[in-house]
Image 1 (cartoon, helix red, strand yellow):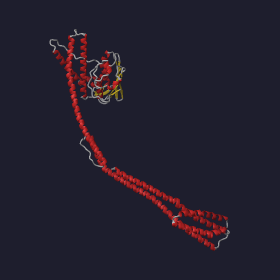
Image 2 (image 1 turned 120 degrees about the vertical axis):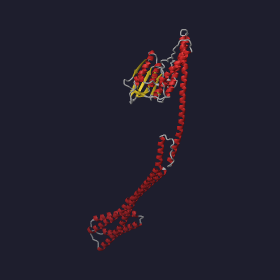
Image 3 (image 1 turned 180 degrees about the horizontal axis):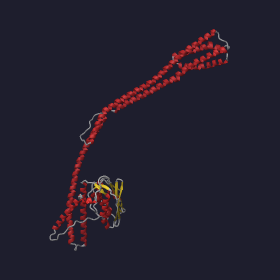
Image 4 (image 1 turned 135 degrees about the vertical axis):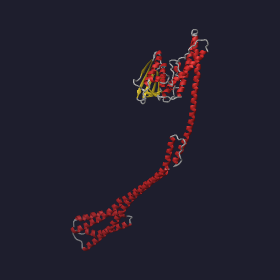
Length: 562
């Protein structure tokens, strides 16, 4: 639709340019003819008459006074006359009328010079001419004057005509350019009105369709009207809407399937975990009874076998607990409240100090004195930092040192936990956070663990919109930095006393269920041992270096490992 308009405007512009150039060329030619040819010729014609007038004055002066100066004036004018006549004759060439007038003027001048002026100059000076000679001279000069007058009128007529032509050409050029400009304005205005009429309405309609699509109106479609460009846009928009509808249907189906799979996974993990807890608790109870019954009669080899069985049962129970907690955490939302992060970190350090002290490990903690509020699920965040610090203790050398530093920078707070333990091999750093992954040096040193701790910690921090940055060198140590947003609005952080008086978190329900299953399994095991006194079967305590981990949430790509 725009192409015809552009073509018309281009044609108008080209015509304006051609007319303007032609007008300028013609006007320039007319002006040049007037100023360089006609006016100089007219001036030369006036010079011819002036020369003849000067010659006449010289003749009269010589006749009356006999002074030589009069003769000199005559002869100088006579010398100038041929050049002026030649210039006039050259201009008049080709113009029959003007050429005839110029010839008449020249002949009249020649006759006057030959019959009157020449003889008078050749005669003696101071001698007056006879009346007959005077009358003849006057008649001859009147003929010159008459011829010159007609020639001058012809030149004046041509000068006026040339001036008129030059002015006409210039005015005509200006008028033509103005008319073409008006025509171009008319074409552009008409095209603009047409564009507004034929484009505005379809485009406004498309805009409304897009707005309705943005409001999730899946049934709306654009009308195919207007110029072909607009129709092409409407067609593409309709195709996009159809594709979006199909994608939305596929997304809904996939979401439904994922929810079904997620529910099935949760049910599977929960069922498997509960089904495994009971036999493991029973096995643990039997192991305790065997240990007590054969305490004095058990050989060292059997004692080692019993201890190995205990450790593996405890490790398996810990793994089941982690899997169950992770499954529950990934399937539930978290309520975030203002929490004093400085107080929480100090509490975590206090919880780990006893375990660290058994190996002579010193923990140095540095936190701000003021409250550092963050939005968090206190129990989950506590478990995340407990997991990081417990790992630092677990992978540190005996009598080592661990530094816990908290710094606040603007809207960010960073908690860095630095140990000088075994570190992580450089080739394995990228695999950190993968489920069940354990560093090769941890496996070689037989350091217990499930391979879920870091994964759980990362997902908890991600759930709190934070970042985890890990730097490690094998044999040097590891630094884990956790960054969270500082909370500046809302109510003050929850105090420890309020937390102690509040309802327990979901983790408490899990632990209560575990205790119930443990009691049931112990009762079952005790009932099968007839005649023996009642015994209390205690669930094996997990390795102090492996604290229990709270549920985690899906890992975000914001977590970075260095």
